[in-house]
Every structure is written in structure tokens, then in C-alpha cells.
Image 1 (tube, helix red, strand yellow):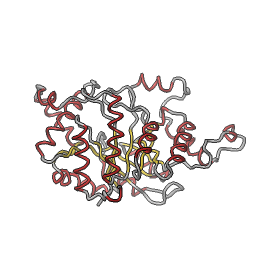
Image 2: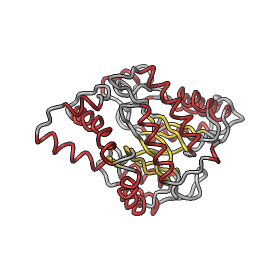
Image 3: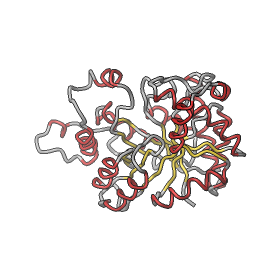
Image 4: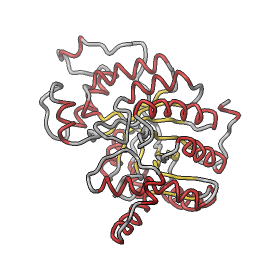
Length: 339
């Protein structure tokens, strides 16, 4: 059965403040480690009321320290927001402290609005436009030390210098991202949970055009999906109502904490709003374990995904943990191996 991983946004709700959401992430990571999930990635978002963590590297250290076997990484570090040397040093430190358990996932977007992106970068440099490739190249050079002769960076060493960078993954939601990951020979994670581009096309294109590199000899594609699982279809639908209302508000530019199920069920939806929710449901897999498996399997098969990464952003923390437990059982994860 396909390996399972988790993408965590440290969800802030109307009943869970950001500090508590961060502690919930640590608790969920322990739970995932015991269930046999293979990876636990933290996202980077800024100025978003429903996401508590703007600094995945800090959370990675906290979570790796309280887990045993699960790999912990970024899903991802938004490279436009950071000097490549800073990213190299922080992730080499994490790799030194938790060898063989760290992943460095990189994203092209700033993960926020324009004003916040400017605030993040205004004291960093004056580069404009999409400079992701430039930054990625520089990040790699801190590892390979292949700066041109007489380049000033030849006298700068990313510490700790006896530790390599962890595996690099490129994250994306488009054909460009899949093509770039294939060209540079790195692992690729596709964000089906918010992408408008077809996940099957992205992952099969990545596999077909992959070029072996010093980073990877063979392609490895992760399919990231949003799932809400519960004992019954009806209970899963009830839990998912929070996500439905939150997405409806986000589409209107209203970035608020995740509403409760009670608030979502009491909301007076118009016909057009219900139609919008129905369209958004194409990115969300909801139901009992059997129902979710039935919905997911065709996409897993068609995309040839090597791994499934699940995001479950429901209101209740215990319900979130239960959803991941049900999926672990449905996919036959080896709990003893993670004990």
C-alpha cells in the first residue's frame, strides 16, 4: 500500500488560538509517529488568520525532538522570503541534530499577500519578479561549493560544514513546477488541495521527463490531498462543513480562523454559495474510510504517485487525530514499526 504522510498548517480556529494550534501540531506529530506515517511537513504562511506557523524550521526542530522515526520537513520553505544561505544553515543544523530525518521542501510563492511579502523582503534585497531559480541555484551552490573562481562567496562556509543539506523537494501546483522538478532531478510534491492544474498531468509529466541528478537517481512524486475521514459518511460531511464555509470566505478575500461546525451548519447559504462549495469539493475527499479510499484510489493509480500526503484541517483536534487514525488503518500502516 502507498506510504502516507501529513501536511500540517497548525490550524487556528475560532476556539483554538494560535499558541494552542502550535501545541496541537506537536501532539498530532507524536500521534502520526505512532501510527506509522512516514513524513510530517509544516507549511509556511504569513498574515493568515487560520495558520499559526510562519516558521517551519522552528517547528521542525520542536517536532523532531519529540518523535522517533517519522521524517520531519517543510512543506515548504517559501524561498523568495529567505536568503539561501540562511536556509542552508538552518537546515544543515536540523540535519546535524536529527540525521536522516529532515526534509527541505521549497516553494516558489511567498505564501502571503503582496504587502506582507514586501515586508518580508524589504530589508533582504532589491530583486524583483520571480527569482526562484536564482535562489535555488545559490542554495545548491552552498552545498556543492561550485561558486566561480574569485567569487566572494568562496570565502563563506555554510555551517555546520560537516553536515549535508537534507533531501530537497520542490513543491508546486502547476505544470511549470513539475517540469522544473524533473529538470533538476529532485523530488516533487504536488498540491492538489488548492491547485487548479490537473494532478495526474503534473505527476505523470514529472515522471516522464525526470533527469537523474546528484539529488535523486529516480523520480519520486508525492500527491498532497485534503481529506476528512470519520466513522460514517454523515459524520465526515458534518466535520467538513467548517472547511466548506472557510473556503467560501477565502474566495471572497475573508481570511478568518476556521469556523466551528455549528457556525457552518447554521450559515444561511444561497444557491450560488452552495454551487461554489460543490465546485470546491473536487479538491476535498470526505467520507468514511471506505468512501475516501474509493474516491482516492483512481487518482493515486492514474498519477502513479509514490506517496500520499494528507492535510486534514477540521475544527476539532481530536476529530483531526481520529481522521488520521482511520486513514492509517485503511491504508494498512505498520504501527509496530513506529512504536
